[in-house]
Length: 455
Image 1 (cartoon, rainbow, N blue to C red):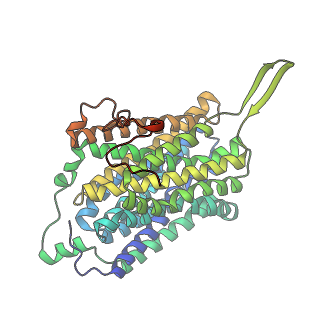
Image 2 (cartoon, rainbow, N blue to C red):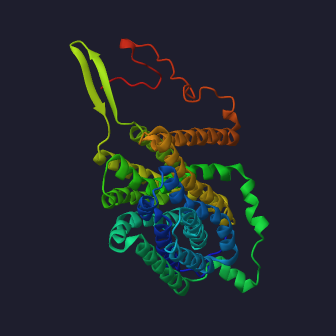
Image 3 (cartoon, helix red, strand yellow):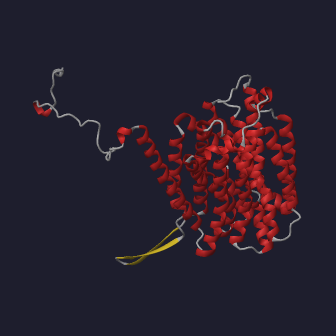
C-alpha cells in the first residue's frame, strides 16, 4: 500500500473536493444529449432507435476510454490527466454546434463522450490520498459527482428554451474549459506520483498494470456495475423521453422528474461508501439488487385492463402507475443504485491497491457500456413491442441474473474458505445440535441436576 506520510487532512479534503467538483461538471456534459437530444430528434425526425443510438454514443467513448485513461492516470497522475481530458472534451462539445446531419452528430458525440472517462481518472487520483479504511467513504463522496446528470436534467431544458440547444452546448463547453484550468492550478500532485518524482522511479509498465484483468472476480464486479451504473446512465438519458411519450409531459417537466431520479442516484453514493466501510460491500449489494428487483417488477407492469366474470356480470378494473407513483419509484430506484455503485468500488482499492486505474477502468468501462447498449435496447424494444414499460422488463431480467450470479459466487467462496461446508446440503435447515430432550417431571417441565424449586 502506498505511503501517506506528510499528507494532511486538508490535503485529502482538497483532492476530494476538487476531483468531485470536476467529475460533477464532466458528468453533466456527458449526459447533455438526454436533453438537447430531444430537440435534435424533433429537428431531424429520428426514430426511437436512432434517438437511443445518439444518446448512447457518448457513453461508448466514455466507457472504452476508461481503460487507457485509468492506466495513464496510474502512470502520470491525475493532476495532469484530469485537466487534459477536460480540455479535449470542451473542444469536442464546442464543435458539436456546427453539425447538421445525423451521421456527423454521431461522430461528434464520440468526442463529447470523453467526458465520461473522467470517472476513472478521479477514482485513481482520489484513492491515493486516503487510508484503506476511509477509501469507501471517500470514493462514495467522489462518485456523488453523478449528480451532474441531475444538473443537466434540471437546468439544461431551461437553457435550451432560452438559448437553443446550440447555445446550451457552448455554455457547457466554456464551463468545462474553465474547470480544467482551475483544477490544474489548485490541485496537488498525488502522494504516489510525488514519491516517484522524489526517488526517480519510473511508472509501471502498461502490461503489468493490465495483469489483474485476467481475474474472473474483476469481471464479476464489472457485471454488477453494468446495472448499478450503466442502467443509471441509461435511465437518466431515457426518462425524459419516457415522460414526454408515456405521460405526454412537457420537456421542462420531464427534465425535472428525470432529475428527481438522478439526484438520489448520485448524492447517496457517499452513504453507500460509508455503509460499505461499516457493514461490508456484500450487504449493500444484496440490498441494492433485492430492492431493485421489487421496484422494477412494478415499474415494468404495463397499463392493463382486466375483465373478471363475476356472479352478477363482468367486473372491469385497470392497473397502471400514475405519474406521481412512477416518479416516486424512480427516486427509490436511484437511491438503491447509488448505494450499489459505491459498494462495487469499495472492493477495488482493497483487492487491487496497486492497480486501481486498470481494474477500476475495466469495471467502469463495462458499466459505461451498459449506459451505451441499454438506451439502444430501450429504443429497439419500444419500436418492436410498442409497450412503454418494455425497457423496465429488460432491467428486471438483468438484475435477476446479476443477483443469482452474485449469490452463487459468494457461496462458492464460502465453501472454498471453509471446506467443511462443502458436503452440507441442508445448511439453512439443520441446526448445529438439536434441542435436547426435556427431562421428565411434574407438568412436563424439564428438571435437571441444576434445577431449583420455585419460590
